[in-house]
Amino acid sequence: MNPAPALNELLPDEVAKLLSIELVDARRLWSRIQKDGELPLRSPATIRRAALDRALSAGPIPHLECVERRRSDVDPFVKYAFRTAEGGLIEAVRIPLEKAGRYSVCVSSQVGCALACSFCATGKMGLSRNLEAWEIVDQVRAVRAELEQGRVHGLVFQGMGEPLANPERVLRAIRVLSDPSGLAIDMRNVTVCTSGLPAGIRRLAAELPAVRLGLSIGDARPGLRARLMPIDAAHPLDEVLDAAGEHAARTGYAPMWAYTLLASVNDDDEAATALADRALAFATRHGVRPRISLIPFNPVAGAPFVRSSLEVLARFRDVLGARGVGSIVRYSGGGDIGAACGQLATLRSDRRKPAPDRQLDPS
Image 1 (cartoon, helix red, strand yellow):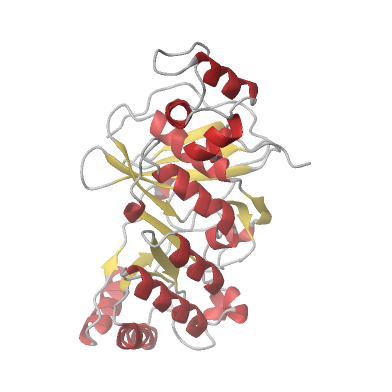
Image 2: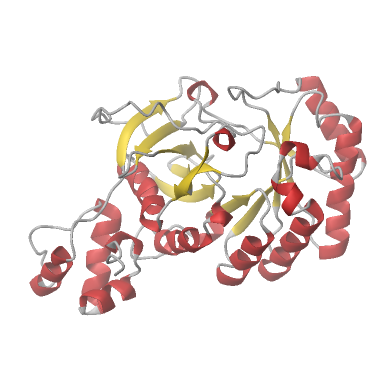
């Protein structure tokens, strides 16, 4: 027999059906769960006592244990480490947005990752398991709970794990997090980033067309991407871009192409030209030009790479621009605490003390 689902991974109508209560009560109870992380022990005036009793009888609301918070000394990024019930560790990052009081949360979708991208710390861990939907949701709830001011405006699934290798739970978590009775995060402010799983890209477009797509490129040259991203052997870039084109056609969104620059590996004129040509061909075929995000490499223990110089980065952008392809350089904050792009990995497994109870500066 399957265990009963956690109330914090259900939608209000599912809670109403499971508990056999009125939808209005289910929405109010569910809102408390999503915002407070727990049910009230006494019935508020707006919720029938019988409905609350049914919810309490369904069992405790599960939570991740926050075991550490690290705040960057150089920018307003905060990294959180959470422990799962069986002792696995995952990380999430609170990212400040340009408008004061708005934040995005970079969330994890798996404990570890099986794809082994060579420039990513998580890829060196291997995969332990998929996260449940409530475990994804709870990362965001925990970050939101510590905001003295402001709100969680957006989500990016670019933490630990390949989100489209866990599509059932990732899509459910997005539905829960976007529901207006809960955290009400607009799906248009959610980006799911993938290393390249075509079936998952198509499912994302079909089921949640308001959600945006990010794609890690690695290297745009035929045969060379696989040396950085082993997934290319199973799903070559052409196949992945076909799926991304279908996503663009269905959603109307230009995909974001993430390209991590590695010195003397994928940062020369030939690599830039190949990336530009891919972008132009994509635009011609699918009617939308991808948004190219260049990411300076962030140090990863054991990775045989170094960051491209500023001069090489500028030259790379010039080559793209000369072919009519624009690009941005992504700022990866929190590098001093291991929170920047590609750096998320578990803390030491012997850290058992709970996180200190302290307020975080919301700036």
